[in-house]
Every structure is written in C-alpha cells, then in structure tokens.
Length: 165
Ligand code: PCA
Image 1 (tube, rainbow, N blue to C red):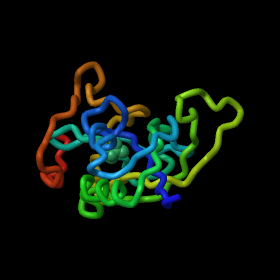
Image 2 (image 1 turned 60 degrees about the vertical axis):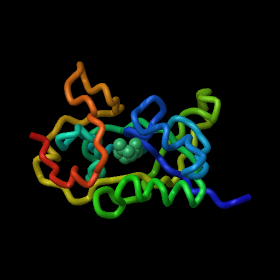
Image 3 (image 1 turned 90 degrees about the horizontal axis):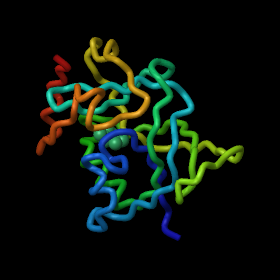
Image 4 (image 1 turned 180 degrees about the vertical axis):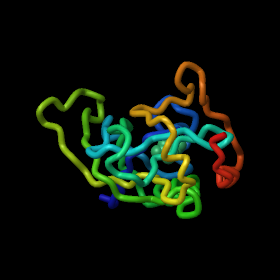
C-alpha cells in the first residue's frame, strides 16, 4: 500500500466546516477518515485575524485538550494541505500526540483508545496578545454564540496581519 501520512485537523478542515470539501476532493489527493480524536496535551486553540481563523498556538500545556479528526492522507493530499495552510509561512506542519476516540465509522473505541503522532498545523510565530485570547476545546466556524464566526478569504496570507482586534 502507498504510505500514508496521519494528519490531525482541528479547524476549518473538520467535517461540516468551511474547508472540509478540500479534504474530500479527489483532485487534491486521498484523505481517509480514521476517527474523531483529541490532543493528549493541552494546547491553546484561539480564533484570530480579521477573518476569525482558528490557530493552535505552539504553547503546549496551555489551554484545553483540543478536539478534532484524524485522517490518513496520501503524499498528494499532504502537499496540497501544506500549500493550502501556507506551511511554513503561516502555519507550521508539526507532529503532536493525539488520542483517537472513535473508529472510521465514528464508533467509540471505549477502553481501546490509542494514541498516534499526527501532523497538525500550528502557529509558532504570533503576537503575544494572541496567547491571551479565550481558548476553545472544539472549534466551530459559527463562533461561540455567533461571535467570532469565520469569514471566507481567498488569500490566507492576508492573515499574516494577525490582528485579533
Ligand atoms: N485548518 C487547519 C488548521 C486550521 C484550519 O482552519 C485545520 O483544520 O486543522
């Protein structure tokens, strides 16, 4: 079998979120759902920039355990995602430890939970005030009570002007 790369998504690439369609577009490569998951460690998941983009800040031990989904992707999809997330200019593709909670049919693994090293898109260079923002455990593009809802942007590199306002 072709060697696959295990990816943890926590933001707009999750099922039902605005960029999920890229994960299931065969033109971008192959992504096979492995299961729902959450980080073993706490990480700050914040929403920032004028587009309300989700960012996992590279500050392990702060914030909450973050929920998301694991996918096994082929090299083509991995390259697509790196490009789409502007790695390494904006996010940095980084290996972190993830606990798998459900199987590919989304059935709870019960006592059989397993951990994996997964690639995830972290933000390493950020303004200090981003670390003071409220931390989420489960991102939704709808925001919390309608505040901080995600805005579509054609050009993610705009987010470099990371001003959470
Ligand atoms: N896309 C990637 C990183 C943040 C985002 O919106 C993800 O969903 O994991």
